[in-house]
Each structure stands twice: as C-alpha cells, then as structure tokens.
Image 1: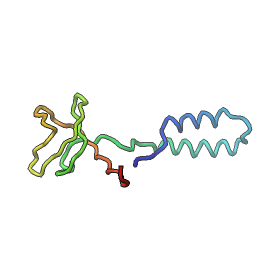
Image 2: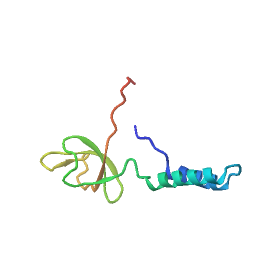
Image 3: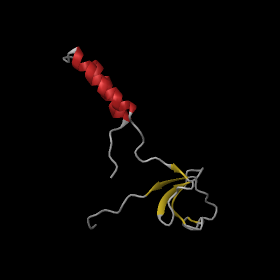
Image 4: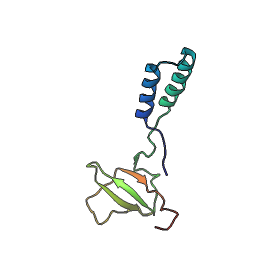
Length: 105
C-alpha cells in the first residue's frame, strides 16, 4: 500500500499556520520551518519509470506509451514484449503492479 501526505495538503497547512491567530511567533516559526522542510521533501510515490535495461523481465507490469494508452504487459528475457495482443504498442514507461490482497476476497 502506498501512503503519503499530498503536496497540496502541506501547502494548505502552511497557509493555515500563517493565518491562524493565537499561536506565539516562536511556535509559528518552528511549525513553518518543519512544514516547509516537509514540502521540499515531497516526491511522487508511484512514478512512471522509463523503459530501459533495468525494466523487470518475466513479470506482469503496467505499461504506457507516448499516446498514454495503458496495458498490462510483460517483457521476456529475449527482449520481446507481450502486450495483450497489441502489436503496434511500443511502451515508453512502466509501473510495478501492486501485490494481490493478503486476505481472501
């Protein structure tokens, strides 16, 4: 499971800290330092990864191409792609698929 706090949430929190009354200036300054530091550390939790020599082989992955079409595909050790029968599909990026749920559905 991918979890995180959005950049937008942190930006709104910073805005609230600067506008709310009843906070002494020392506390406000410390909170702003912490929230701004967290904001600088934000990164995409599940980014698209360019297809390259490190692309996983012999396992299903989510793939996309320049037109943003998405398929489940597999790159075999031989370098041949299997993409749900789409012969014209040339993937540019991939994401690993999440693990199946642990509990029975």
